[in-house]
Length: 589
Image (cartoon, rainbow, N blue to C red; front, side):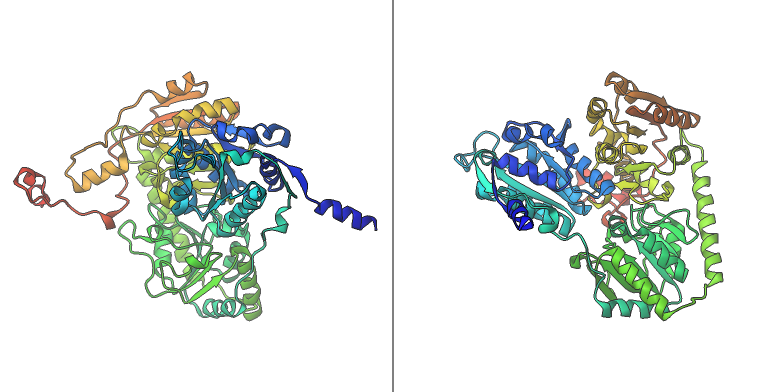
């Protein structure tokens, strides 16, 4: 009888305001912090945060908010939450929400919109936010009545986790006020975190392919990280002695110090990985969509095998065979499916025999590539070789350091130099490719793991888009170290103008202040570095002081990586007499 009474009380609806319903749902979801800029539209809800135990982290630009939430999610596994003023506050997040969408990061965007009495009048700060975000989110959930506030927010979280991406929770600003009756559900009551291990018949087909394979190769991706399945990928690699590469800019998806690790594929990745993959007859792709950009030729190596039989494991059926034809597609959780696959393999092949000749070749290739990276770093330049700076930086940081990388010349070259032994350490801008990602992402990563060193690798162009957030780091005491590789250029684009436009530099040369001094003026540590020997001591001091720090690293602006998109660039043709001198035929041979 007593249990029945207790159950009735638990299930009873209670009176609450919509603001209270939202906040209590956030609490049930384990949300500890929300990123954004204060606005009148959601102030009634914001007033509840301190009492509820939710911290509001104010940024200097709303784009930074969603980058912070994206990285927070990748490190913690908990969906990030962002909010802004209706109209411009929310539209300022378009780029960073689009980036999170491409990165498959669960996120909820609380989107206050114009009040219901004024919708459609083009009033102050009005925008059709649902239409704007429809193409860059997994779903847009619109609150249609105050009684549905908690229900709609639950739906947003359910879809964000299920489809791995951001969801817009659009709520008219007057719907924060009023009264409703509802009960706050716990996440297990409205969404499922456990995922299956795929169709058993398809798993069996995958086992048969792997057993018959002569040169199988694993590609481990983001799904292995998000499912906490990297150790299981290692187990299957070890059991069959299969070399393992990591997908583009997910260098933490397989421990780099493992003998079977061959490194990252994709732009500026590992030649050892590429040559190994080129010879594969079976590819086991675990938790990766095998993106087009991430499998393009690099170093003039067309490495992705055309004839190999691909086994692709992905939680999202949309990703199976989307970019490359597969022999076996398994819709399943990366960890659960890998565990089941290994179990079946052990039943099928109790004592697999290693191919020692192949393992020796892999070891040799890795050693050769490592030496090549060092040799390239030691080449002299007009000033500091950016590869040398990257090499010294990676030597100076502890093994457990979280590294965020932007997009651009040096950030992408870092793909070859960044090695991780633990998952959730590599937070990259990925295939949306927007600049200004790395620093706010580093702030979010640091919030997720306050006691872990966090370093951001950024070019000076991208730094111009994010240095304002040093104020956030100082204000919130977030001890991130920003390593600004300063070559006074939008260097990736400059390389295009070198190779395709006869060194005609339009818009690619940039000048900036002494970023170390700017950092100091904002209350952070600042280091101006023009000698390679200064890098390690600066990193050491910044980590010991545990304060926000900026390293302005002066590097050679002529030492540039190959173009990102040779597949999408052409040498110029000019037809009008006025522009004939710009035609490739006039200056090329």
